[in-house]
Length: 238
Image (cartoon, rainbow, N blue to C red):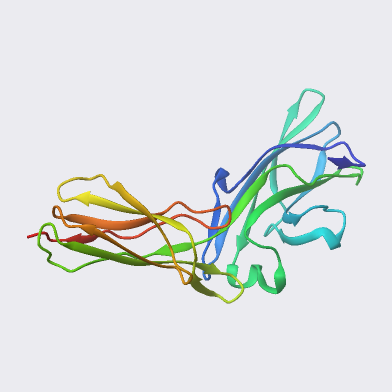
């Protein structure tokens, strides 16, 4: 925290505490809530999301977004001053927001600033943190259909993730993905094995046909990419 004024910030929450997972199109409204306190009172607050090492230098800021409007705050009297319950919204369009190298997937920080009634400025550049992640897609296809009991089933699929720079989805290489099976009549998938995507994000593995049911792939996600689960593909075992 750095301040000429005496405003302090706390209880920052970005997107309800959940990861911000973005595809290549479509705007996403990211809500932010926080609290502020000042002995004299606050006239205005500001909110930014930023990425980098030092907020005081443009050379060390790798990405930044400002909230759509100045935060809306509700003032309440408190011991020794005034407390504020504030909220803001960041509307982020991945097709525009990350152009020209404005940040990458990973950890972003919440920067909050305020001016008191005497125009003294206060700020805290790391009130809380949020994870921006690239959306992932996953497919699964089991064949042949139908298949005789004991024969080999081949399950293929592809894991791809959003590329905010190109505006397209591209294969995600060398990632561990779980093959899961749900027996007909059951509501629960169990993991059969873990396989890795190849250099283009494709998956292929084999299992022995045992009973009617659904095969799917499931990807847990990474620090920069969201999770994804394929739709189950039904196999009829004769």
